[in-house]
Image (cartoon, rainbow, N blue to C red):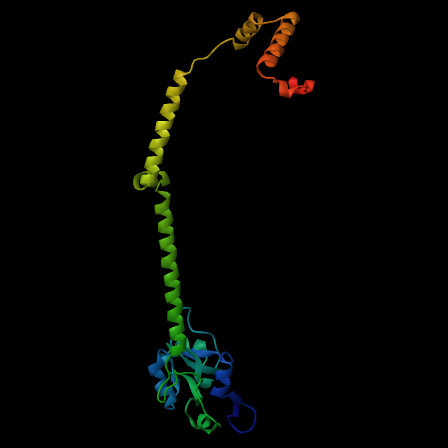
Length: 253
């Protein structure tokens, strides 16, 4: 995973295999594109014109520091080396000249000498290294999902705005014949009730009239007894037969 550059054990450098396991082990220069990697794989040192300078400017570094080299869109380094000058000197030189002295790279003899040499992803080709297609497709799918989600959210908001401008009673009255019929029936019933109410006659002082009737038909005790006797004689003459006698008084009454 590491190699001794001078054989004295004083300077140990990580191999690309170690960097593929831990991509952030060393700071990295990012190439301008995958096509520049073919020069690195061919054994050339890294020049400043081949580096993609970030918008915030060149990162600070000193001469003799260990740095790795990466391709845009691929997290696995393709080479490792030491800086030839500091960042201050590089800026004074106008970012020209050699930036990194390459000591080990993908597809060199050290990479080939490893048992079961392999590549970290499909972006590593025989003559060049490009972005990892798996990461690229994942990023596109994520952007597509986010775009679909935003479109769906916008459609929902539009539907809500349209829904707020519609009166549900207007929709029912315009499109639902059952609702129209029900409204007409209710209107007719209301008119009929009003008509019936107009025809009603209020009878005032009912209790007084009833009391007058009671006064007109009031009977004395003697009159009641006489009527009971008359009813008894009437029932004996018309209802009670000889075969029914004798009978209990309760049955007779």
